Length: 271
Image (cartoon, rainbow, N blue to C red; front, side, top):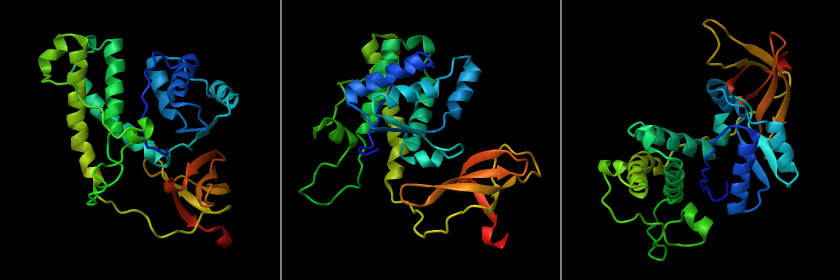
């Protein structure tokens, strides 16, 4: 979250043991961690149900982390934007990998090739510039996550090629380099437009409060259905602003939702 660096781990299963092993590898390489943030894991639930895997036991992993002074914080459901710093890179890298691996037969991807490819992908993502280019001649090198992670100004260079489609049938290291080049070309095409300045919210809005009646936006709701409810309590963030609330729906069901999914109907003072 500080360096905006990326670390990719390969898991052979979705059970708690493999997940803890991945955490151990991360801790061994990056050092101890005080806090881990993630989504609520509903995407993992769907993937595991579809593939028939045993789901990661979050309580088991939480106990393991707390014993090592590490806190695991989950975002509320339907709030992927709260993980914008990592969700953006995860989504973009996943889409590029999907398009790259769609052109390669799975039989050509051994475990060693896949692990090395993910390491190359991490190096590509961590070499991205964090700041706009500067006109200052005293600052010829742009800051990147790799510089902060390795404490070195030099970037990782690709081996001399060329590498092409025929390398998928040759030895493994040339196969990895061809796949890495494919990822790089697609990544550069998608990432460069993001370096332009974008608008963002600058005007503070009134926070939602207890007893407000709100309409809940839900893409899964049926036609002509307008789910609404009353806010039971709010959960302020560290800066004091309310970004998620607990709601009692009209059918007495209680849900946790981000404010981006809510539309204020009746303020509490008017009820």
